Length: 208
Image 1 (cartoon, rainbow, N blue to C red):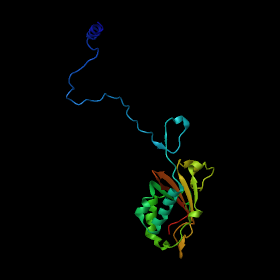
Image 2: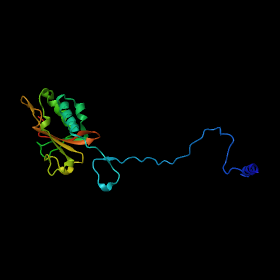
Image 3: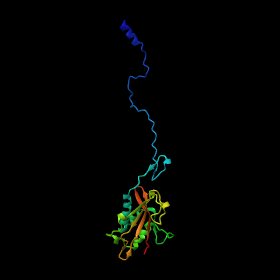
Image 4: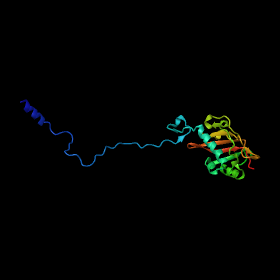
């Protein structure tokens, strides 16, 4: 009797409530689609930003080594009279400012000015001489909140964030009776990528 009731109970279960199949599909199964938000481009990197700016990307400040690389490269190119290397250290709008003519004097393009100097003067005579000493360099950064300019020819308000001004006392400015450099050169450096280029060059020098 119990066996009969068990068989009847199984027979009354009826058809399954979910779809079934007796064979697997021949085609490869594709995974279910997943919604993916397209990645947005990060904000353009800046040197400084306000807290109200929201999402920003800040650039890591360049260290003193990057400053020394540009300054050393500048004087090395002069001594070697390597105009190609020198041009690579200038920004496109680099100017050479001579304090001899005063603020009202015209400031020529730095590459053009140095090309003319190398044609008139022999800078290879500085080879073997100590032109400047790294320990005597004075480095001023725009983010240092300068209250006065490192040089009268450079206005503090004109400095962009990330700019660096370097005062370079010249150890050897003459060879024999020929004056080749001023007593000091002030280099206004502007960051381009991961290096500094010379934006302005200030020097007390008059072309002979």
